[in-house]
Image 1: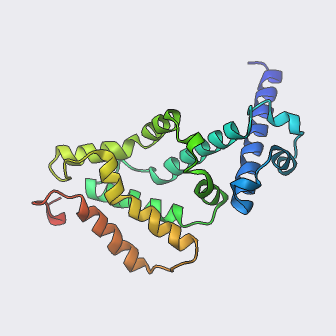
Image 2: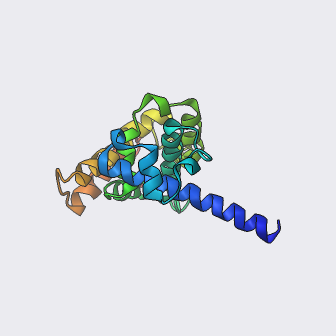
Image 3: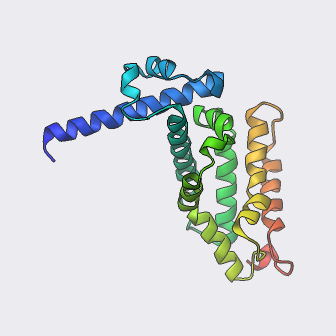
Length: 205
């Protein structure tokens, strides 16, 4: 790759990022209904026509934004996921999920707006989720193989054990309740115990 090609590639990537961040900010501030390509162009500091070089329409922009946020979440909560025992790894992921989710960041605020839109609940998104969060599924499978975790489908294990972290983070982010650290630690332990096999105790793990 010559210098000119490198500069061109960097510029295109930079504009792509500017557009995504602009859309994220607009949705976080005014909701999904407030998103328009012209507003995105103004916020990103690019010509309106430039957006259509990267996204064919608003739906594709929202789809790509969700994929981007999913990647951010996975990167944040799965760092060091392979270190420690099954229990230590589970609780580290759980706490990171809670701590990440409670932040009033544009990514979290925008994700809440469009996560349930039918247009982006596609097979492509489901496959991306499986790919990005594969370490969590592997954790569940390893726990089941060792007889520590209930032999349930990974999605059911996630709903039982991880969804509470996101729900508590959301209520905290909205200012509905201010959890004490000891309460969060206790909730994390309860979620861990909820998926343990009946004859398993944390002392034996």
